[in-house]
Length: 305
Image 1 (cartoon, helix red, strand yellow):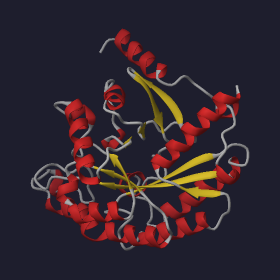
Image 2: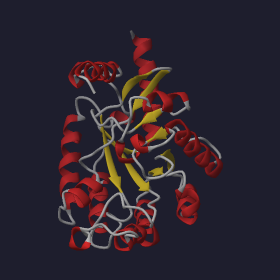
Image 3: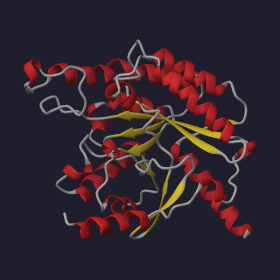
């Protein structure tokens, strides 16, 4: 790609969201003057047992990848058989409804788990049809359509939010999502408050997501100790809570059944949630609830000017 093309793409990306310091914006208000809105995102994905695995816990023998990769696929499958159900109970005990980022094809593969998420009142978000980067899809628009269709058939309503597999986007992804009726995305991890992105056909909201308080990064990429989600999560929350006295913030906690659902990690998720819930002026919402609040605030602020 030429420098001219790169510069053109860079300008298009920046034009979607002009730079805005958080200190210079109109003041948002959470209900009850809360300081932080916390949302928990549970990711459920379809990993093919016959294909290379998106993440691995064991390196290939002698450095030579072998297919099928049963050990690493089974690592993920444990999460769906066991770890996921720990999430259901931990969140139920604390009265927290998760946002459920799910591959469209996982709805039938893991129907009992997805049914449990639906019965718990979780907010279903599109997470691609299979766990594959958006850049590797033969037809990106069709994958988005199929995912929305699958979630609509399963839940009775279309998803309002979207998290791309691996947070990947092509130059067209945002435009395709907005055109398909998606109202908010998680891929743009660039702020502590919701912000408005410009797609070709209109606006779409970025709800603050995370690559820092995300167990893929902590446990699968950085190989941190089992308690990292608690130690880092407490530090993240405490600072956002302090900052939230001046202007409210959003904290995302992203978890996967095969990682934080493991027996040696689950207690640290419990400890983190209990630390958060031990504070006043905190709301635990879904992505859709954060979106609704932000849109209401934009209308309020618009009416005040």
